[in-house]
Image (cartoon, rainbow, N blue to C red; front, side, top):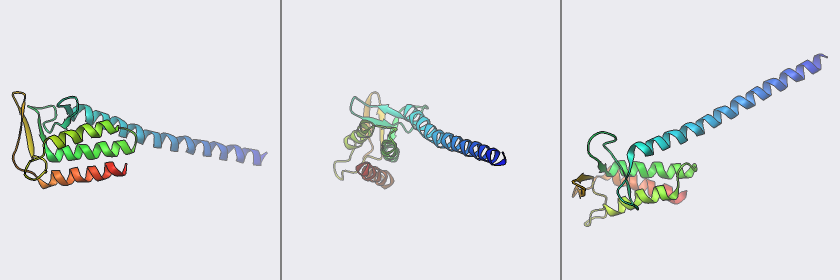
Length: 144
């Protein structure tokens, strides 16, 4: 009788720990997915059908893009693709925006782009932190 009670208690403990472990792992995945999609809704904007940019202004003020924000967005999209939270198209649209806003004399991304009366104006200088982040995102996306 004591052996049966011990087996029942051990079985209950193992089942409880299994359920807690599953819920914990599932919750992390759900949080990652929710935060990624909320971030996309708040910051990713369509410039046109093939290009998306990270709106550095967020919900406030007129839209503008920064090379650092674009690189960060590309890196997040690549990492989301690795976890099957995002798609290749998400990354490609961000990359297309990057490609469209490179400086002709260096092929580095313009540091800042502003929307003025529906015309996007590129700042004529680059910023190394943005270009490094873009490079890191491209390398990570290639591995994924």
